[in-house]
Length: 362
Image (spheres, one colour):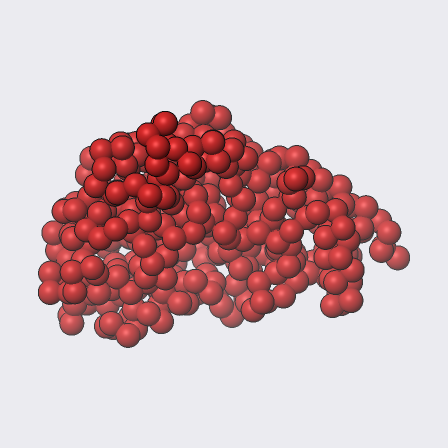
């Protein structure tokens, strides 16, 4: 069967090499006569997979021994609640930088737990830009400052991230993790849903500083305590074993082709190919993000009419491009260029966009 060019925002494309290896090992992992899907999470074979995934993640992300690496469930959305439940107190405030829908959701969830405030926001400009780093300033009562590194729906991304804000800094890095260097040491907690750059849906990676973990609320239900998952090596309950296995394969694939440095080069090449067409035909493609905030992961644009949008999407479908419709909340189009999307896919899309623009220019 011919593979399509998958520009979906998540669950996103996975490396073909990874899928092929998983297919080979599906029925009998390492000729043991059982599948990963059937294997106990307490089994020595799975422990090797789990530890291999943790080690590969640490290497790729340069995670020091001062941090724990957890593989959890519930998506980034569960972290929206778990973070304030663990670290907000009656005397402190959860501080949030608003740059899009997911940061709004994180703020809303924290507001059900305790006091919150907005540090700064680009909502008035319809989330077309990213705040100045100088605007990200903590206050004395803040328990932490939370930001989203890349905004999937609106197609904006922090090019430089805040460093020392005076309070623990937290990053939702779900949609650009592993696509560029991330200075983990500048953060107390980093989390990411796996379904964009790390693996399949159903798995969330959390990186948390050990010394901060000691201050977490210990009166929560057991499953909501980070300490529980640290103590039990992310296996207090049955983990998503097949997702962890695929994560390990994706991490090994990433290392083999050059690591995060190579992913960053590819991300720039892919996004530059699309943005160059948009800049060449501004009368056809109206980009949502201002130039300085353009994401290398999610390229968002719209047309002058819904009719033209549908015509573009129909042509894309004929060429076996999938996942190009914009998020239902904003419309338009979106090309997600995650790590497993080949350069050739981006170039084919750019060629189509250029041809479409030429045939519809006045």
